[in-house]
Length: 331
Image (cartoon, rainbow, N blue to C red; front, side, top):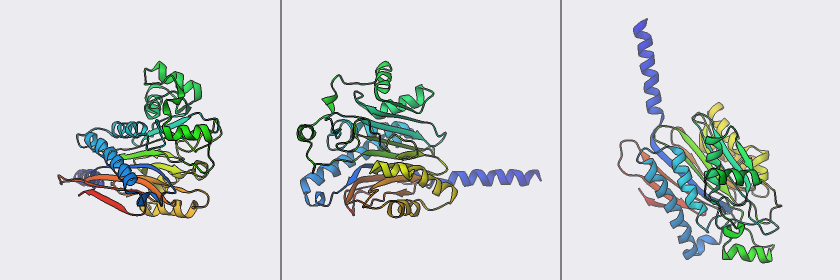
């Protein structure tokens, strides 16, 4: 009988060791929306391809050396928040009053710990503040002035002028608030690290011309950001109100965890079934504990990319996309 239990334990341990089929995985997104014309603009498309490549390279440098998921997620999103091409940090879209209010969240799948900030105006890197909320408070979310003051008290990078987040392009929006101007994207990153843990992070400037004080799905745990080692790590982008109503990120993770649905099938059912291009348009990125990924979107396009390393191989596979097709950068 003793040998039976020893054999059972060995078998279970063996199952756990082979459960993670890929050594590590990183998936990123830079927002979804009407991007049909972007693919035909070779110069602009090249800028986005290069930015997505850079983001994946930043994450790979951390994960390949055994760095943990939160390190990679924050480094990648820091990069996006500093790049004016994306709607997060510098380059964020503005409220109807011409000001900038930023949201971010991060969550770890190993213990369901999470942190978020919403409606912040003076935090240079909202994702760092979200992580500080997770690790240095008993709370999950801080909002508005309280979050700004918290970040300053913790010594995080802050700015004196809210217009720091403006770019020449967004300044035109501030001055004119043209009805036809839109920049409703978000940035996100999901990771499976070498330790087998999942992490998800999201950062955004929100919807263009949003009512001041409006909070979308990105900082809401379960709506725009979620991670559970037994389910998957998810970061969403799109019309936030619908993602909140459908609790999209948690919805996907639960389908994987409880219904044992393949991650791609579950994600497709949510994006193309529960949501639709007329209302809840957008997309998401996700990775499960085996390294399987999903990147569906029901909008005209989504800035996205992935990189993974198979066990026992020295090379990584990397690809990026804007529209319907993916461009393989390395294999």
